[in-house]
Amino acid sequence: MNVLNFVNAFFSDSAHWQGYDGIPARLGEHVQYTLEALALAAAIGLPIGLVTGHYGRGGNALSLVATAGRALPSFGLLVLMTTLLGFGMLPVMIPLVVLAVPPILVTTYEAMRSVDPSPVDAARGMGMHESRILFQVELPVALPLILSGLRSAAIQIVSTATIAAYVSLGGLGRYIVDGLYQRNYEKVVGGATLVAVLALVTLALFWAVARVAVSPGVRRS
Amino acid sequence: MIRIDSVTKRYPDGTVAVDRLSLEIPDRSITVLVGPSGCGKTTTLRMINRMVEPSEGTILLDGEDIQRQPVTTLRRSMGYVIQNAGLFQHRTIVDNIATVPRMLGWGKQKARARAAELMERVGLDAALAKRYPYQLSGGQQQRVGVARALAADPPVLLMDEPFSAVDPVVRKGLQDELLRIQDELGKTIVFVTHDIDEAIKLGTMVAVMRTGGHLAQYAPPAELLSSPADAFVEDFLGGDRGIRRLSFFPSARLELTSDPVIPLDATAEQIAAPDAPYLLVTDADGRPLGWSEPRDLVAGDIRPDRLLSHGRPFVPGTDSLRVALDCAVLSPTGWAVAVDTGGRVTGVVSQATIGEAIRSAHAAGLDDEKVAG
Image 1 (tube, one colour):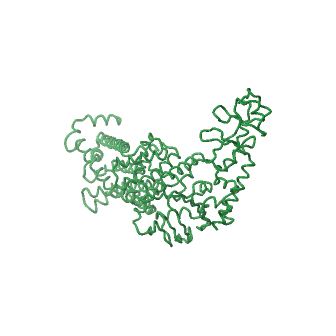
Image 2 (cartoon, rainbow over the protein chains, first blue to last red):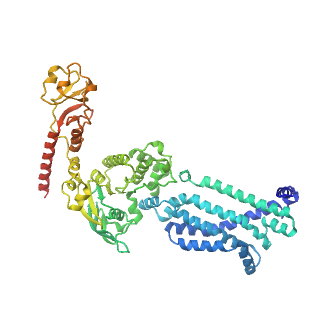
Image 3 (cartoon, rainbow over the protein chains, first blue to last red):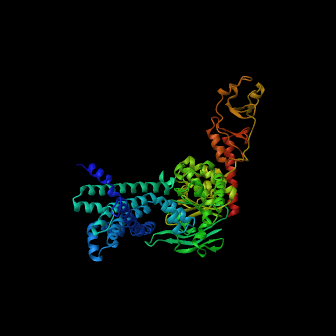
């Protein structure tokens, strides 16, 4: 039996499409974890990245935090958090957010730093307020890079959110963890396939968002 | 009027960018700050809209200290044009120009209508309105920069080396355009450049600054060329300042002669009559065709393709003595051809006559200086 047979067997089994352990339910949970973690990470990473990037200060501190964040193994953090905090959503969210903040933070900072200084100088010289310079002059130009940071964060969350299953939560990781436990490789491969597809869908979504949100004047130049 | 009153800018590391500078910038004219890099000209400009705060001294705008009003209000009353235009690449040309009106709370329609009007004023094709900056050439972008600065009709325009990044041909076009716009709008313009020729061409008053933020000389361009204050200014002005000064002398009073001017169908007597080494042949409308020695001309059979080039003609009254002299120097016969605005010959003038005009203009200039002194 090869991988494709596993995939075929997994998806053609009607039992996998229904109930609390069905694909729609697990997919829904996985998407929910991803969105929550991404929202939290963005809520932390974006403002800090935008403001530090705008003022051009704190770049060294940022890269230190980012490197530290990247060095933490998500799985280890999950086990540690569960030991400390008990079972629940929080111990899962912490490693996912810790994973996602560095790419968002660093790319946002770099995106803001890479904006051509002359429009900013012109905007300031014509009496634009700093907040307006940030949101109406720098952000639209930095947007493609910022979106790419969010995109890599989102993809990392999608693949890492599988660890939620280790601490009795749902999501697509359920199939992988349970399949390994039950020696049901059909389930393992099916779950992995779903994660991969979700990652690709995420990529496509970000591409679409960039098409809509980024000005043609920035996209083409 | 903008009055800069013993202003000093000292940076925390001790560098002095501008040193006790005092300058009165007259209304409705172009004042150029010129000097080598590091002379503090840009810093001076940026202190006027408070992009840089002076360490000492005050700057008065119409008698009031610019520190008295909120910085954004001050800046919105002054157009600001910078070297690389600094356009917002995510906005269309029309929205770039409409930026300040929109900031001042104008409606979208009104702001865009105003932007369209300005595009025309700075010589931009209306078809460019919906384009993005990357689709425009450097010169066009700079025009957009000027239009954007003018959008809210500010009384003051600050221009920081606005034409330095474009090629010489485009730069000349932009300079001419600025002079034309200034004729129409009469703004108080402060213009920074490192190019002395640009300063002399554009400035009503020129402030030459030297390294360390000192004012070396503040004078109208003609005076700068005729009497540089010191060796630094003289050196900065460059070699041929005598010739360049001729730009400020009109050619209207040149004594023209029409004796050597003959029509294409000239008779033998008309060819023989003038006592001149060369004759200028004109067509039926009086436009110049070319020069010839009288002995090479045959009445009734003057061949335009056999004539010597008449060179570039000048227009007395419009062109300066410098242009007239240039035409005479370039002419193969040493005579310059004067035409009216329709291109019809009004007379010719020799290098010798132009030389006399230059001497008398200098004498008159010296008299003026004596009166002024």
